[in-house]
Length: 75
Image (cartoon, helix red, strand yellow):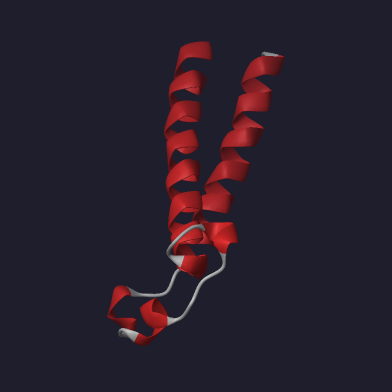
């Protein structure tokens, strides 16, 4: 097995686990208005922690798709 393919497969598994983790950390949309009224820190942007979780999930999802295409190309 090619070493590049092995590295991509390991990264793919880590990104998959990370995506699942960050999606499960998000609060459901029917949680009410009180979480959206809380003041968030500037670390995660304007939406507080929830906005950072959404952004991180989106980035990991994009990496997941990119790695899937790279694995297909390499193998």
